[in-house]
Length: 205
Image (cartoon, rainbow, N blue to C red):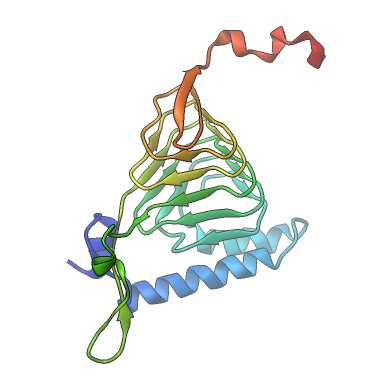
């Protein structure tokens, strides 16, 4: 297996690998280029996003700034929206459905580091190249979810379709579909039902 194949399959991999380094540098440069534009520069932004996120569905809009480790390992469905400061560390695949909204300062972090510092610390090859033992776990977010501000989604998590994740949550375990979940660690508060419709909230109209 190549180091990229190891990384994407969740095995220990060498992050100093030449192919991976080149992919990261490209994604970081593209992220910086996107972040240097304003929202009225639609043609420029579209071109950069197409290169940064080749698997991005129609109508998806990222406010920026954005930060991607690789970009090419993240899939967005159609009509998604991300507010300021979306960070995606996609060392393992990140799959996001249609109509998913992210509030500001959300992070999706697939990397996992060993708990023991003896295995986690930076090591050096004979030629002086630094590396560490790292692996990852994929993240999946179903369609029609709202991820509120300052949410962190850890590797290995699946969030079911139609969920709302409350502000400031740290999602460490799977969330079943149509759930309102919140907290650190994030837990299911209750199911989202027809009774939650805004049509029953007269004060809003």
